[in-house]
Length: 176
Length: 172
Image (cartoon, rainbow over all chains, first blue to last red):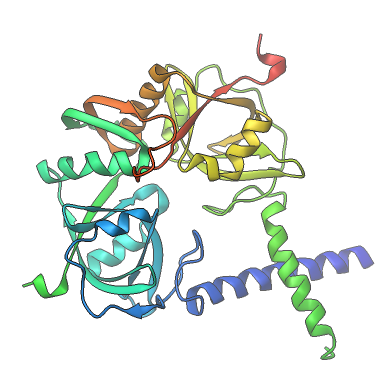
């Protein structure tokens, strides 16, 4: 009887702790906590946007915040500064929470070295541009070097639904 | 509840939450976990069907407790390969270097096996091509895995792959 009661209390404490942690991460942590998504990013709003983001490549992940829905959402993603611009590589096997938000509202805020920068995410479509951006991305994130012709392969029906989407971040002032 | 009990309960909650990482329930999505519950079945001779699963979970043996994480994997010639980005920093990789025994959860089934780091370039390149097919949906004319530690100014991730082998008693 005493053991059952203790187990019951233990379970309750674990559930409350997990919920409390998730709420804290989502509302109060000031950004993602490791792989756990967070809310609004905290940091120092940047006075101006860098002309070249190459300095960002010393980081492994980029914190990105979206306000597409009522509650701000932030997460850490694979990224790369390439040809002067930041690019995001979103893999479907990590979920599509950020991608859904970017499709709804492309405005994002990113955090680098404590600074907050507003950007607009533009999806890099299939084709030559995507092929050109994939090579440096694959090298940086997965240590795979590709060269020569690249072709998309059709997946058998019912096969694993994975994919990678590339977004280029642009300055809000450059948007029409 | 009396006010004096709250600090104790909060401490218990914090400890409990910390311990969720060692509980007998495997990883929770992208969060690492403790050992798997249940017993493992014999590993398949051909792992090709594992490509139907985007992620698999692996249990490794640490010095004190078993650790589980969700990871990427590809099959090549019927063998299964596990991939680790930023490998030297990963706890499961450190565990594997110490003790190759693993249990794998693939599509809800649990298998006992061992995993060894792939050192030869031919196999590493094959894993890289398998990764491109499975996770990126492309085939490249030339693809090669960059093995070893990145140069000081090279910002690429250090990626290691591990080949899954049968457990010791089945190794013959």
